[in-house]
Length: 235
Length: 235
Image (cartoon, rainbow over all chains, first blue to last red; front, side, top):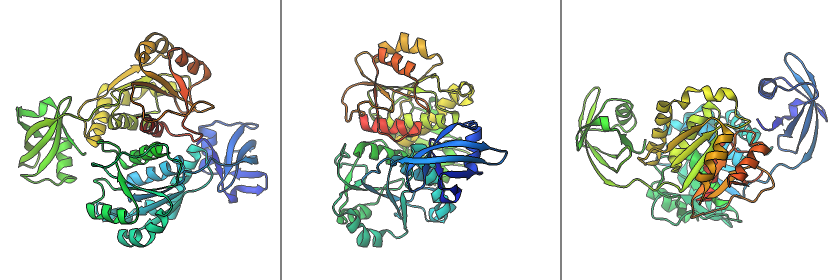
């Protein structure tokens, strides 16, 4: 936790918060804060700044807070991702928030196991929890938008073309394709497939929506690693 | 497991193996193989090729194997990494093997907690287990070399200069430094710090050994994510 993220409900005055949950435990056990110590804070959806510990008691902490800095810029990116397996999904949410992805669209794909859609990790509260862990890690306050598209074809045919319009549309896909471009300075729509990759029909449909395949070499990366590697190369 | 990795002890003839461990379970439960099916295989430290399932019984499988392809090229890189916390360490071993790092040197640093050096995940067998998971993921057969340097100063002063010589020496470090270079075609020695970063004294000593700081932007990445992001940008 490199940034203590504050929710509206934490505020007892414009410049004063009280914390009594996971964040309080973390402050005590990991940061070992004492009264008078300073901490970096951010207001979810808002500015970042500093807090000072005013009071520490058995079950809660009171802090004075001030905000002066904008959070870091997001990447100019929409990430379309075939739904990963549940265990991986949680880490992907963290990675997406950490890397500065502003918009994540989770889609179905032929090689996504149907059971993956049943995971409780897709509940809004569970998604938000992982995104916040990622924001705390990277020092950012703006939650990425997460959209769930359970049906591939209507999404790719009806909605993806408008999303991809005016952006560089790319699909990460192993094979005899051009290498993923580097150091771009333009908006990108990037689709990353499931374990085992997109099927040809899906690549075809993604192509019609304006996304062309690029590859990262012959190594096969886990989804989380592929997301990080593609974003680090693109921007 | 995108590649079934074979050890010398698996061979009952030059072109025949018997498997009865985790790999057998994985073949049955995840790949759901049947007699006659083909699988991608690799010989640890050697070539990659194909296997055919000859016999499947309750507790073991027999496969015929042939080898014809070289594994993918490694990166021209020595990675020097401040020892991560144990939970992260295991995933870092996998990531290093997956990304094609040929040589990893784990070093101490002021901000590495002493207790991290006690982890059983640093036992040779535990390291090998994680490296093999990474190789199975990426389809590679060559185990990265892992070197443990518990004392920072003698390593950086006495051994690092010779390692860095003739390579581009870089330290990933947040701050007002040049951005990490992109798409290199030369050997690199890259040092990545612990959570909280290197201290100035360490940056100074790494500089004398030929490693200059570069940064990846203002976001603070977990070690595993930083490794992937830096390698994807460099090569």
